[in-house]
Length: 184
Image 1 (spheres, helix red, strand yellow):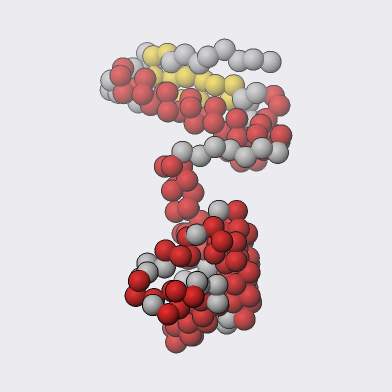
Image 2 (cartoon, rainbow, N blue to C red):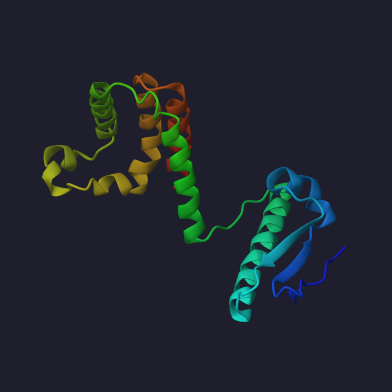
């Protein structure tokens, strides 16, 4: 069943309100992820200018429609296109989550340096001969961005992470990062 476009109405108090029904095919998943099952409601307080209320309403509506589209794409087994801003936001959320896992017990700082050294040594196994002879020619390790090198890195990353003294969640993340590097 298709739902008509939402329209914003002004109440007697001067506030702006709107409602958007949640489509039947996504209600169960929408409820799990976002709360409301039947409809979402928009509210802009009294004193909000019409132009600001319209802008807020458009953002609210787009957010709900993106949620519904994401749920439908998920059901079909498809990915979702992210804008650059959304990708950065997602990376920031992941970073906060990952760092929070190690705030209480970050490990031994001395082992960080030795673990880093072991990882760099593993990566250097895949470095071109010219780099090993003259590393000053490429201080940014540009060779590591070449497709041939990137296909080798996941194996080095996995092997290095398994041998390091890092917590299990970090090792799991290294495996995930390895597969991500392979896809790049």
